[in-house]
Amino acid sequence: MKKQTKILFATAFGLLAVLGASVYASGGSLQGRFTTAGSELTIEVASTTPRADILISPSDHATAGLNAASAYSFTTSGEALLVEKLAVSLKGTTPYNPITIEYEDSDGVTRADLAYVVEGIASFTGLDFYIPEADSKTLTIYADVLNIGTGATSGDVVKAVIAKSNFKAVGQDTGTTFTTLTFAATTEPNNMTIYQTKPTFSLDSSSPSGTRSVSAVDSMFVFNIHADDGGEVTVKDLRINLTSSADFNTAAVVTATLEDPDTGTVFAGPLQVRFSNASTAYIPFSDDFTVSASDDQLLELVLDSATLLDEDSGVDDPVTAKINLGSSPVSGGGVVWNDGYNDVRWMGALTSSTLTGNTVNY
Figure (cartoon, rainbow, N blue to C red):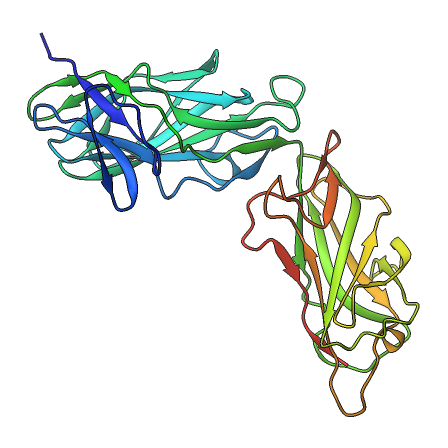
């Protein structure tokens, strides 16, 4: 009869509740390790695990793009192991089905296996996930997002984690079978939030830059809003921040509009520019406007730069426009948008949470 033992499941920064195993500090983080028959396995959240993000409902089955849910590293410090069975558990809500795991098999070939979620668990059998001796390999978890209204709800928050049940790994030297994971995770993969659609903001190539003269009708900042093909996006609040080198005429009354540069259609405003001081100002647009699914809407900020600026003769007055897109669902940003179900204050994982226009020198 093959011997059964316990393998510790750890998170990248988590201290685990280990039954009969030693715990030691390594590299500033706490990990547990259980050794038996010359084989040790540590499972932890990988550095490649996706950041907290927005996933769109529904999504096509794929192992790319928005469907990436989490990633784990499996590390041996003894003999090589072949993982034949494991399970993925959904924490929070259950808007994913099916689940796909991607890993490198014993032939060194990237392989994807699929399982359906039953009562929050996706169980995988017949795996060929090979972890070489004293080496580490990554297993990535991907998710298909269900339709909102038939399995998912706008605003669902979920994370995909390795379950401690339904596990089996076999030592490739000793033949020892490992079937028990013991852990109490304190750090886990990031949450994913489900919405019907989302906007993408980008600076347009026509946005002004460099030196220009002040004007009573001045296009200072041009940007684009793209709506995901999951559905239309309604923009409800959009705050544009302006910065200068203490050049704003804070006593002036300056109005601004958001317009389509091609048609002249006004989408928001006119609204008075609000000055915090001579260096910072903002325009809190609150007129609702909608961008159709899969469509783009180009917008320009139009205002009276001659009145806005307290010009000093012979001195450049630099002005930069910015939009805070939101760095997290908690802190939010300067844009409130709606996916048809909920008002949202962030846009998922972004390279930068600030859309910054070109600096214009007047």
